[in-house]
Length: 228
Image (cartoon, one colour):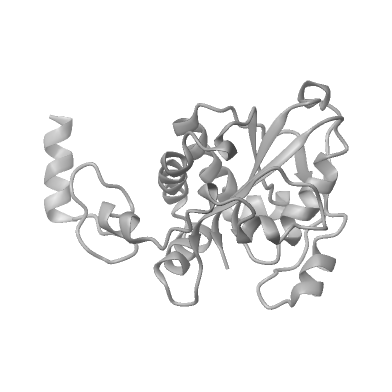
């Protein structure tokens, strides 16, 4: 009976893809499989010293770095990020995180002990209702079967938006805004995957990594949904 009602609702109020606007078929949520397939993938997880990793050269020590897609103004990735960050479509983050997980499964960057999403400041988290990076991390965790740690790294200061800042301003805007809690001993000597929604200059990843590497022997890799 429940399935019948759901099918009836779909006929009256069909679900649409958030990217192309087409009808979603059974088994699809938020975004159609065709749009997921057409996302401009980078394949960076297969490339040594890729462009994502190069962003952090000479700044902090990173084991591996990757991004699922290339971000360009007006492309499908911008639409996806806009829906995820500003339109309340938090389930979209999980779906794309799952796709990301299947993409990198078996690669070096998937061989980590834990996943840590880049945190939001509590004020912004309260306003948005969820952390988009954590939603992506949930999808990755489900596919890769790797636990998420979201109670260690935290944002102690609410920095201003990065969107219209240049490289130096982004770096300056990300300095000293993160910290870690005391329950750090269990991660000594471990390898973690830092997850963010989009990477531009690498300032946020750098700031998080500097703090995390206070933990003895901790190795850091990072994965972003998109790279600009």
